[in-house]
Length: 365
Image 1 (cartoon, rainbow, N blue to C red):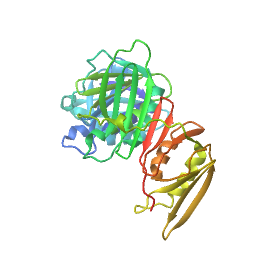
Image 2: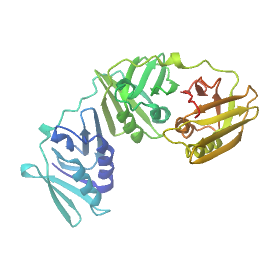
Image 3: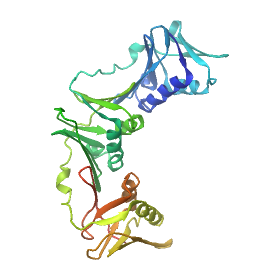
């Protein structure tokens, strides 16, 4: 193997795959990444057996080959190489790799490709292609509701459902529910329902941009995302996702129209006065106004009034402010429409047919 590549291009590819490198593992080879060359392309692959990420980078390949190298050490070396100098990589005898950049000469010992896990190839040609921006927005609006409770493993990811020309992404931790939906282009016949692990979703949001398309394909118990020169391969969570639709309240005619920025800022200030023993902030709603308040023993209190669009009955209700902040900071709209009915019933934020966020109330202490 012998190739030459620009440092910044190489570094970008290495950083794309780095989070797939196993942190704790029983197989030492998983702490390595695989470098392969083919024509004028350098391919970098990392995996922890649950998720694999590969990145292709253009370079000048003089001799094809493959080798695995210690991922963290190799990344640190490339980071510290001189700027604006091409990097030359040559594989020599006994898995010894030489790295030359300007007047810097480094040698590092690798391991043969044979010991590295085989990365699956896409076998299912029936795939879906959608705009990256669409998928990125849907994931951003749901990922925060994924459960961190490992005993409820089916909730440790998002449900992706493709049905009747609609794609839907769902996440819940049992205390809140986020559902993002989008219509698909004409001609889409794919029907799938899978649970994608949280780590995969996280990595996908790092790779997706606002330009271009992402291709999604399925094979056995795996899902493949192709974004430009990057591919993410992930195992799926095996299990039955709860019937989330039955917990979504019917849409209310009477809604509270609230300026999003003001709502977010006031909730953040109220959040400062919460503690593990007293999490809930109080929302008092009357005609034309909403008061957000929190009284914390031994700390102090905060109270803030917002002008809102509302003419219904007076209500008081408590919520975990973190659950409101999570959704408000990701909504792009200037105004949000909040539905609340009673102190012991869920609150709902809706955005047409595209988004529903259901959050359970809390008792105000």
